[in-house]
Image 1 (tube, rainbow, N blue to C red):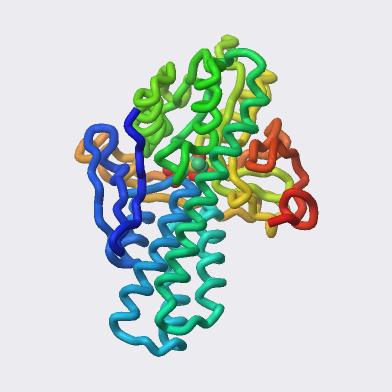
Image 2: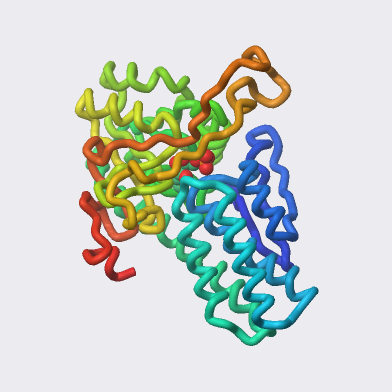
Length: 347
Ligand code: MRU
């Protein structure tokens, strides 16, 4: 299988695979400024909670390169970097990984470095974030194996794999690992309207990896559950509150509701960087609302009258009570989650 690299920082530039073009074209864009990174995240050139956190971290490195061409005065550099960080924070609102990665970059900026060290220190931190997120994916996949006593038919949503993280993925990482152990009977892949992460990206990944799957329209998932065709649901997460309420791709709520109805285990696979323990419940999670064009058609093809009113929430919040467990790099957890208890206290 060709190893997909959704993002590569080299020679002072961030090369990103343009996911808007997949699966028909593999096009890499070269980003040279923090503003280009902001725009790439906002317009979903790259997406997926862990990946946008890593991209934003590299965006801060690009900003340091830009700023240092104008000034080397430490206080000015620091101030301008903090401004860039607050801009990058606004590129997408729901995934907490973005905020978490930028919090880490902020701490480096705030240490008040000697001006020659800015790029080196920031690059070191961005690379550490990327490497740690990659390692977390591996650990999540290993812990997820505990769910597979026998080969299972798994349903997932959106794209949570190599295109959504710097590693093998979260929910899809578990599926890859289980497949390697001969424990995947089948994967059901809902299209994931309107952006079609399932149809365009997850199918592309699974096909490359030789994992057996079937693409379905979103509304078919509960029917398959009712027919006994689904043994397990595993999804990713963009933000998890202390009580386990979980924001993830729109459609996750409906899957969890159906799984709850039919007694099917429903797991969230996510790194600890996806937990927002400042929030008691999911009510406080900001839900991104995206433009009408995503729903009115695809590309140049219009499927609805141009001025039809549209409501387009990119994410929903699944009640923690419907979630069987959270597969993390520290094992399978259940709520409530507390900053003072394991594994969060160790972070
Ligand atoms: O809008 P997207 O494509 O960024 O949404 C992605 C998801 O909802 C994923 O499930 C989530 O970010 C986890 S990715 C490992």
